[in-house]
Amino acid sequence: MGDLNILKLCVGADSVEDLTDWHRAHAHVWTPGTTEHITRMWPKRSEELLDGGSLYWVIKGSIQARQRILGLAERRGSDGIARCALVLEAAVIRTEPAARRPFQGWRYLTAAESPRDLPKTRAQDDALPAALAQALAEIGLH
Image (cartoon, rainbow, N blue to C red; front, side, top):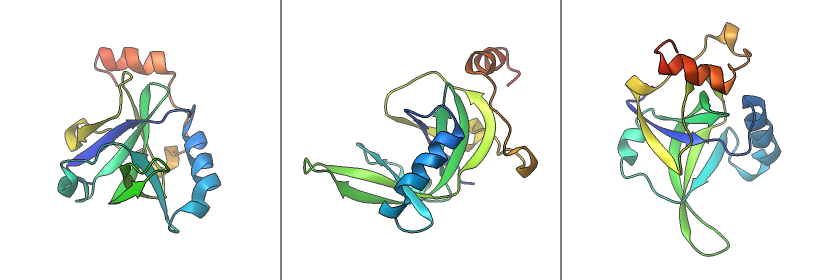
C-alpha cells in the first residue's frame, strides 16, 4: 500500500454493496478490471498516489472500503471541461470502519491515517452504525 491515498465520500451509497452494484452496472464503460471515478480537480501529488495509493470510500459516515489507484486520465464532459478520472482497480477491499465527518470534494489521506484492510474472513461484516463508529472514534477506541 502506498504512503499517500485519497479519501472521498461515496455519495448515494448506503453500503459497500451499493458501490459494487453501481460498478457492475457501469462496467461496460471502463477497461476490463477497472472502474473510474471522475473528479473536478487533478491531484497535485499524483506521483505519490500512483506509487501504490488507494481511494478510500466514506460510506454513511465511516471509511468502509478502498480501491487501488492504477492511473489518472483526462476526461472531458459534455460541457467540454477537462476533469480527472481516477482509474481504479475493480476489486473493492473492505477496511476496518473509521468514522469521518462529511466534507466537500476529496482529501489526501496518509498511510498512517488509513484504516487497515479487514481480513478476508471478515470481508462481509456489516459496518458499525455511523453514530456508534463516530462515538468510538472520538474516545479513541475505533
